Length: 73
Image (cartoon, rainbow, N blue to C red):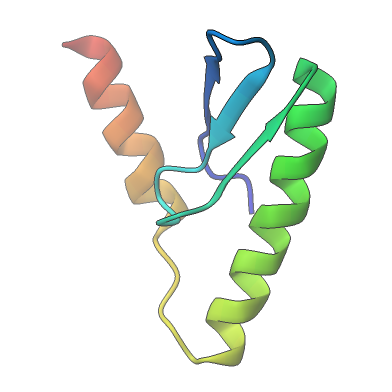
């Protein structure tokens, strides 16, 4: 799934990226590319764990609608 992501530059260098829809799903890296690669790994693990525990996954459409509403404000 392609949930919206947020990327933050770190003061000390590098980046942090997160998937706001997936609580605690974040990664960091020295470069943007490294950060995004790590985030994809973390997201896959987050989704696998949620499915293994029969947790309901957030609606991708609802998350995209939230982002659109925020960007329109």
